[in-house]
Length: 127
Picture (cartoon, rainbow, N blue to C red):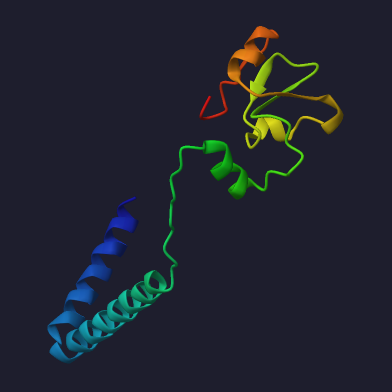
């Protein structure tokens, strides 16, 4: 342990001796400023190329979600459940996308799904 402390102490002394030589210090400072400027320039170019995100709101949540999630035209309702499950989902939720087509049951309203014994899925936002 003592040897490693002495090693770092000697390295620090050498660095201080180099810094006392003003030419080396100025060269190191110029290199540091150049690298910093280059990095900041790269960051500003990355931000410049990003396309803005436009969010449009509508009263019909299903139309918006369907347009982003690729909802097909064969949708028979606003909510979907599995014949073998106990939860209903919005068509674009991950749980709804795992249901096989032959097992899907469609409902127009939440009340219709709940009257058939289905409950809302906890991981489906918007229910």
